[in-house]
Length: 138
Image (cartoon, rainbow, N blue to C red; front, side):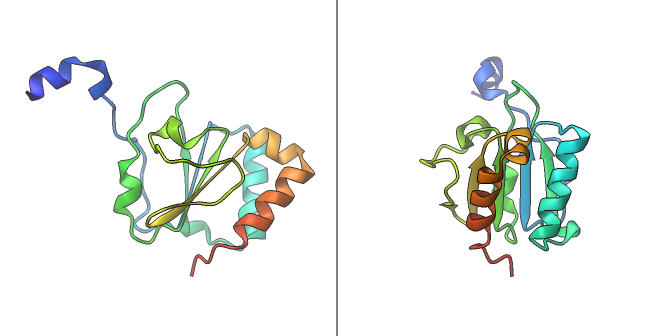
């Protein structure tokens, strides 16, 4: 049976190639950022007072299926923040709306517009700020 499944493209979804922190509390998933977008992420994480050693940035490969099952293997994980992609794009098939916290036990899922759009919009940044302050990373 394994041989048959291996011949079907749908079943050949590679694992995310990423050096995972032992116990990340926050995972930021986005396309590879431009320097100004990376600067925005650094300002955002500093504003939330998230410790750099507890944050994992994942550069989601464009138009490539990737297996994100490792998210559930990290018990300390509290938040997965998706920039510019709905949860289904990374294989999390739950009903979730943009700019709303969605429980996805054991973590919360939150998806917003792309990094460049959020960085340029005062309204989007305010919404992000207000919503994410509700999460205790304790």
